[in-house]
Structures are given as structure tokens and as C-alpha cells.
Image 1 (tube, rainbow, N blue to C red):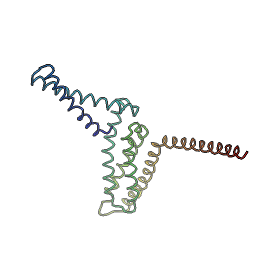
Image 2: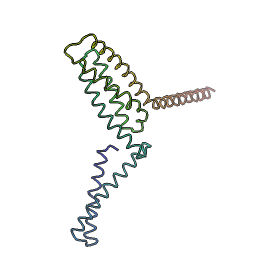
Image 3: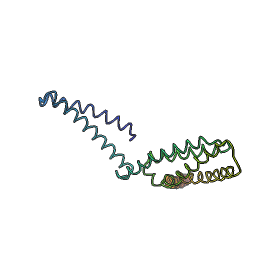
Image 4: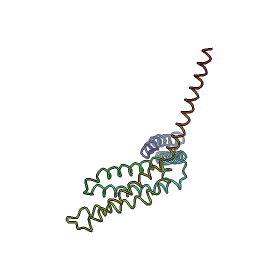
Length: 218
């Protein structure tokens, strides 16, 4: 469940639970205002944490993850988000109009990978090459390219380095596209399977219709 929606659900249940616990303590057990207030707070906290544990367990069950696995993935996604912010900042600061479309496409693909792995954490295992290798290389090259391209004067060596860096960035952009393809490979295979099943069903229906038409003619 979305963390914000989970928080709203916890609050929506915790407040009524706290109120009911306080009423039962005060009127049912004649506990007095002080003790009943404590029971009210304890009931609200227990309900809040209980709902949180339940929604977390359901989330982990739905995605087929253990708590340890999800903590590992969440930690790396948080680090990945910080790295993506650095990368996008560097790509925006590059003063090279011809490469603008390529940089926009690269930012779009990296955002897509992050969103997919955040929404479906188990996909992170298929994106490790992106997070642990390609993303770091992209940041390093983009930041250095932005720095060199911002220099007021450029000699032959700087121009050569800029050209070499741009070429390497292009190669890394292709590698990131392959990362995305690798992440959705299972979805493509599943779609191919569903298409084959649908085609077989269509052919079977056509065959049955021909047989029925043939019988009618008789």
C-alpha cells in the first residue's frame, strides 16, 4: 500500500480505537479520568502500530518479500534516488544542444526504472546492474562533462575529452535501455505466452465454426 494511504488508514482506525478504549475504561470499569486517559493513549498507539504491522505484512506478502529483503531494497532505492537527483542535475547543466534529446531520453528511462522498482520492489533484483554500476558511471561522466563544457576556453585536449565523454555517455545510455529491457523481460515473455494462447483459442473457435457450418449444410 502507498505509505501515505497506509498512514491515513492507521490514523482513521487509531483515533476511534483510542476513543472506544477510553470510554470502556471510564464507564465500564469506573477507572477515573487519569487512568482512562492512559488507556485511551495506549489503545490508540496499539491500534496504530497494529494496523501498520498488518499493512506491512500484506505488502510484503503481495510482493513475495521478507522484511529483511525489503529493508535492503528500500535502503538502496533511497540511495538510488539521491544518485538520480545528482545525475539529472548534471545532465540539465550540460551546455550542448545537439545532445539535448539524448539527455532527456536518458532521464526519462532512469526515472522509469526507479518508479518500476519502487512500485514493485522485487524488480530491484533485476535492476541491480543499473543501480550498482551504470548509475554511478553515468553520474561520474555527466558531472565531469558538465564541468568541462562550462569552461570559457577549450583547447584541443578538452575538445577531445568532451567528444570521448559524449561517446561514452551514448554507450551508457544504450546500456541503460538494456537494463530496462532486462527488468521487463518476464512481462514480455508472459505477454508472448498470452498471445499464443489467444491465437490458439481463436483457431479452435474457427475450426468449431467450420464444423458447425458443414453440419448445417448437410
